[in-house]
Length: 388
Image 1: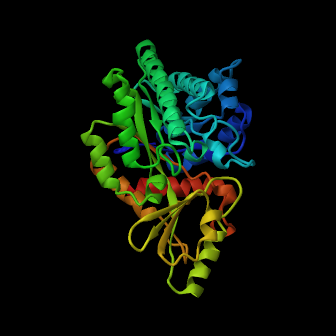
Image 2 (image 1 turned 30 degrees about the vertical axis):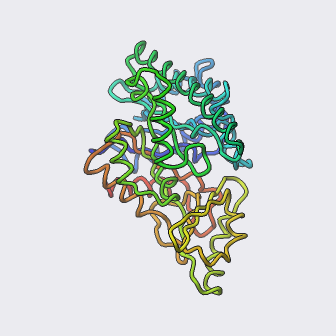
Image 3 (image 1 turned 90 degrees about the horizontal axis):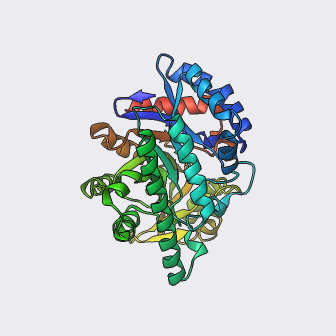
């Protein structure tokens, strides 16, 4: 839905179903309900997530025309897409495979270009479009320095190919589409400083036209991911603006956080609460902050729990997208205040037109946080709308 500070939507990666017909079926059943509650008198946007299979199927037969007619009929429009997960994202073990195939591969390039073609056909004439994507690759897959450098070089070259293709789409159709790189813990790019360093010293240093790169390659600011790293949101956003690096999309999401008491018995109670979020589907990276301010990084919640008795650690933040309208969950909390900081900057000085709520973990949340899916989406979007 259109707000003063941007277009607000939700990401359809919350829905199970990896082929196009399954995905379209759940959209047809849920979207009219959501729109009636949230935007009854005006069009409402959709943040479309398509698996590789669904992206192929949507371009076959008359599926695209049918989808476009349905959007017109229901008052929906697509302006942003999630191109991070390539394959199955629900009812399967995802974990580190969310990065596969990574940006060193032809498969990732072809998938992303397919999404760009789809978006160029769906995007309203008066909007730019964005596709969020993986932060190049996953660090644990490339432990040797030389291998990681080679992978970064290869991935960057492929991203430049996509930027050039997006420029051609703009020339052909008049539609501006940008690829929005999404830093994530343990990704090749996992923080604001890492993203900026790569953008300036690898991407721009490749010698391509700077305007082409800055128009078509942007940052996806996932608030959850940046909050996990204890990053100073306002300072990062200001630095990006000063350097002329655009933010293509804010993904509005909250991470888990917990203060770890010095009392062993009290700490164990908190750790027990955190252990209930240790589930087998998604990666739940943890960044622990020690008393001296230094950080310890764990690849998943299980590894962090194994070192929960480290008394030098005072706080954990975990990559588990919890409902954004909940801050206090008893002994543990969410990083909701980080969302409020980012959206306050956006409200006072908009730096993107794309605002996408991305809580995809409804099926694997502890029972106490679960609610009917449509009700949860409505509550999340209404919370953001009210904040803005």
